[in-house]
Image (cartoon, rainbow, N blue to C red; front, side, top):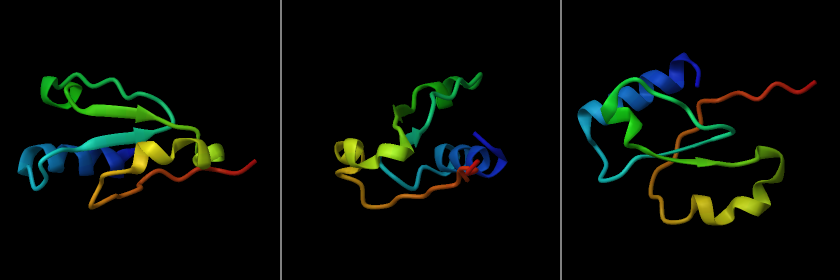
Length: 71
């Protein structure tokens, strides 16, 4: 996770504006902070989003901070 995503996640955990925070990304993020380690993480393939519809259901708010570079 990059700097922007990391800062956003840390702020969400600290301020607790939502009942639940779920991280969705291309790989699992390993955190040293015990509070961040308890967050639910869902790993998806952004090239095949149609296969991950269920991973996005049930959320009121979403934010994407990762930029995928095309080769």
